[in-house]
Amino acid sequence: MTLSTTLITQLQYHRWATGQIMEEAVALSAEQLMTNLKTSFGGVYETIVHLYQSDRIWLDRLEERPSGKFEDYTAPGCVWELSDAWAEVQQQLIVFASGLREADMDRSITYRNLAGQTFSSPIWQILLHVVNHGTHHRGQVTAMIRQLGRTPTNLDLIRYHRSVVPEQLAEPAAR
Image (cartoon, rainbow, N blue to C red; front, side):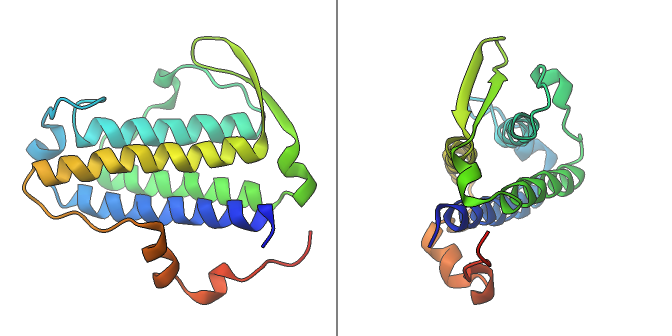
């Protein structure tokens, strides 16, 4: 398996796991979504908005568009619309990665963080960061769902590999 295939598979997992979390989020009441559970971003809704905004910002950086402030990445207020918008952003991340050749994964992207500092990172590191960041905060959402008295879905990577259509994991044609 190539680095490109591995990264695309990780992004597909990111989309799948986010979809699982969003299914759980839409089943929560407005009160549960907005309950401050004293986590990094307060509650479920604020945490998923943070993740959505982060994915949009990283997509802009990968496509070498300037990223501004979090306020420039307003999330839809309705959780159903947020789910749809986020799925589209994640699909765009997969399309971006799928359009790269293996050698492109080492190419560095220069960008500014939200504090205005300039950084340069290889594409493969950015893509893994996007997935890892999502895993971190989905774990927080999972804990919040438990605090709200519900049983969250298992988001283990191996569960994803066992449940997806085998063709999705097939090695793409050589780039």
